[in-house]
Image (cartoon, rainbow, N blue to C red; front, top):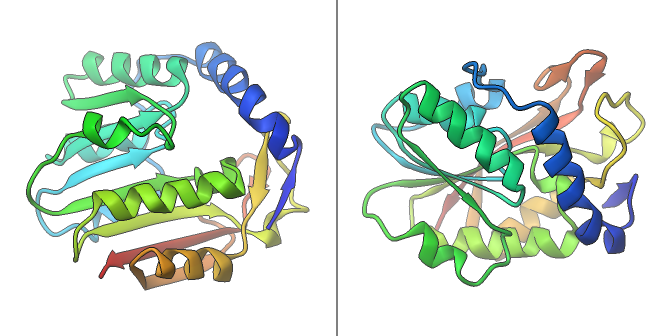
Length: 219
């Protein structure tokens, strides 16, 4: 795996300010369109599901899942992002809950609560925005929250996206090797049930990210 824009050491101190500024400057309460990935994952859910979105950003995908009757909690480390997501959900009468937290906070599992029924851990464009160590924290958290049969759904920039055009400003991002991520997921108790990669999954202006799109089942 490789990283660009900021070093892992700078990432921890700089990311919070970057994303707070980013979401504060783009805050709006109009109903956002969901990502292509959210629409794809929604088609894989069999009935009402508890969805925990890690790295929820402005909440557009959390709000989408909640509007279809799923029990949704969005988590993000940016206070501005969570404030924007909460305001948008409230403006449209959507029942979704949002929390400010880092994924390595030992109190996060308790804050998320314990509910019966199927669970999906959802993370779009989050894995490549965290450090290598935080990736392991992410998988450890996902393993601890899930039970056999539960889902983990991820979409991220791969190593093949490293040279492509980027629209967003300089910030910490990695380019992830899918085989490495899948091996780590396997070691945390997940098996791959769907995996593809390519262009066209997350095009934004001139940035047509080369992404991996993967579903895992907890074994």
